[in-house]
Length: 339
Ligand SMILES: Cc1ncc(COP(=O)(O)O)c(C=O)c1O
Picture 1: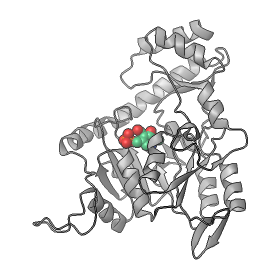
Picture 2: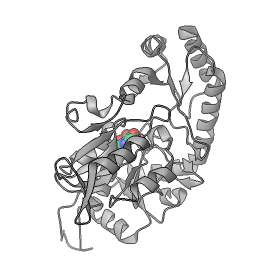
Picture 3: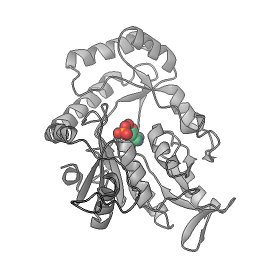
């Protein structure tokens, strides 16, 4: 159902989005000691899925307006700091292979995907889309998840549809779909015997949760509609309040409005005020280069926009179950705190 919704031919359910990313990278050929290019501003699971394969992220800073991977930095990096050798892309400084690139559709938004593809397609560089937050988002009418041979969605509790925990790999390639299914189900190669032909993973989605997912998929259009109402309400009501800014969206992008996030220099004051007033509000994820496992990774940046975004952005309540009255209270409290 998810594959059909996202316009892909095949979907392979997984226990969560992280495992879906892990298997997608593995099937893309990422190996121990490889690098994988990743935005610095993402949820830690994207980076962890790279580490599970013994590979290392190369972190690219966020662009200051859309908060996605900065395409200028990516282009410069690929042009100046990589070479092709034996059909592979290598990082010039140490000769290590760059096995893949993982764009992440941060907060359900997308970067200029035409430009992204034009940059990346010049190189032998497999793409794995971390579309975990972007179910229902489109770029020029094409769904997130259709810009790479393998892409992943998540059904974690906080996502636009949820099975409590769950995920899916989508692809248009039948062979990749079969391999993904094989690897996520302990690589069992015989229907009636416990014959496993490689080291597989127990990454299957529990069938009871899959049933919940089916029911959730039926509600997805109504969830997207509600998310869009929430986004337009907040944008209307918060425009001009103090220094509040919003994440930039390109005209080609129609986002699912997954998690509404505002930017203000008064982030800490607003966070404290909202949380004291029982309105759950959170900072952005801490950028990967600030986490102990990733602070030695190569980090491509000019101004460290990730740090600025981390220190100025906060997500505000945007669950599909929020009522109009509750939305009005959130706005009222924000105005009170910093308006
Ligand atoms: C950007 C991003 N990548 C990966 C994941 C991992 O998904 P899951 O929690 O289903 O493992 C999430 C969500 O949790 C995410 O937001």
